[in-house]
Amino acid sequence: MTDHESPTTDTSIEALRQLKQVETETASKLARAKAEAQERLQRARDSAEATLAEVRRAIEREREAILQAARSDAEREATQIVAEGEQRASEVRDAATQGAGRLKAKLLDAIVGEFRGSGPGK
Image (cartoon, rainbow, N blue to C red; front, side):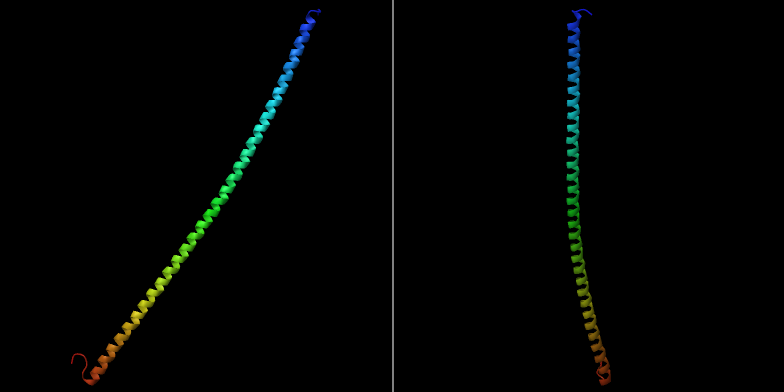
């Protein structure tokens, strides 16, 4: 080696060292950026999952409220139907009782009338 080649070699070696340092720094920056991006992505996923879980809970609460309201409505309607049925049955029973009473009265009148000689048809 000559004295003339030595400064060029030193310059080349220094350039290679700087290049290696830049590569190392760049790789380090990329690794940090990748790690930060992964952390942000994980936080976003966690947030989305938490939001989704809360929405599911809210939907379940709403579904339960709707079902409870439907049960109450159905029970109220069933109670009304039963009450109407009981009222109608009472009316029919009363009508039958009154009809039987009238029939009984007519039969008694007919029987008593025959004994008196002034029954129906005479």
